[in-house]
Length: 327
Ligand code: GDP
Image (cartoon, rainbow, N blue to C red):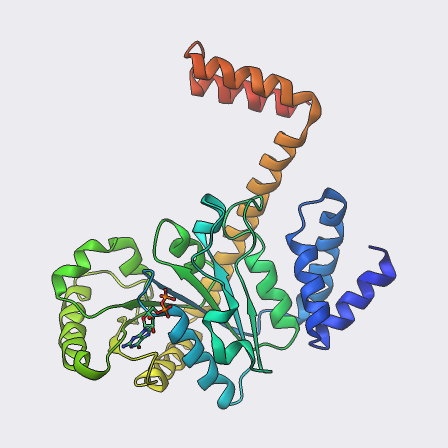
């Protein structure tokens, strides 16, 4: 890509054009080394237009109703004048090559909504793990004028922590159940949640959902909240009927207002920038280590020694670092 084409991508993204947005996403997701410099230059150029959105993470087990919920919440938000981008961080796509998330057809209304943009989860095998490119894509969509970014992830593995580290507000969807059923959920995930919504509170489930919201609330009161003056509320909602969705949005706005006043909002973003920097450093170092032709043979030989047990992983790591820093 030449300089003039890069200018076109920048202008195209700033104008909100979907074709250019897609090109820009391809550029930042690209692992080709000649694109790296361009991706950095591009992100630098759009930097002043980024950061202005409300970034919201949505997590929950498969089947809890995430896509139905996001379809409903996103539609509601566009109706009250917002432009909504939906991104997915899908741990399954990098492990098995399959995908639990990100299928456009799962969000029927949003996928044809002119004020919404849905980015399916990145394809499998992208270097740097499941969140690779998600933050960069978020910046592109902010520059393109989307003022709300919803980042969806499935509640398994470590993806929740990754997503919590890139958003201002983290929402956990649960199904109605007893307070005991919270024990199956990792404490860490509960602590990350800025709000818990007991979903599918409709029809025969409505009363049960309200009861479990009370149960969950008392279980939650035993945890230390992530933000000092915010006790994460437990609410009920239905992605299917829309019940409770505006009330949840009110809480998101309230949280933003409060954290802006206390400085927690700014602190959270700043900490995220530092974590992101280190994630990129790690990513680049590992990448250049594995790409270095002179080192690949030595690394393979070292791996064999570790496999056979003749070299400890500790000594092997020392050797690799040594080779790398000398090279
Ligand atoms: P995801 O795997 O978390 O994205 O869940 P989906 O949104 O795909 O929903 C899983 C199933 O639950 C589907 O059969 C939906 O129709 C159903 N579902 C989703 N939301 C609701 C809801 O609010 N109420 C009811 N009753 N069913 C729902």
